[in-house]
Length: 201
Image (cartoon, rainbow, N blue to C red):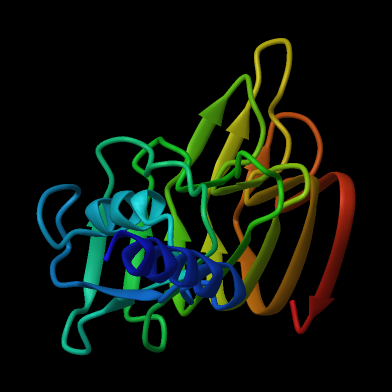
């Protein structure tokens, strides 16, 4: 019996090596416009960051429209993530904070954001008002509007009022930039390094 049990364990371990478990992606739905708490965008990003299995998708309830007024910056996005809203029905107001900070520990994540209005962000003495993309990460921003965001400066920083690419890959498709300002370079967009593709921007 002991020999048979050992053989079964060995076969199970060998099978696990040959056929590793396939990670399953999670879909998280935002149900309200709250700054924080259950079913909010902030909670959804926190959940996605904590999911070590695979890429995640954040959707918004189809009947949800209006403004998410941020009380502080949203959590830094550290995993592969898709955030999708229907037809500019959701506006995220930074209320003086950066909205999206894309910065993975391995410098290799892909984040896709679609259908959002991003406004009211303001960073001081740093770069990237509404969005900051860090080294090695990829942002696909589609069908969105980025307007009235700021990156201000005292001595350093203050570039990329709407978006700053700091060594990543940025792909913009059908995105409107309007009324963004910066104390230094790039009122709308600043690219320190990396690559950027613009299509109907």
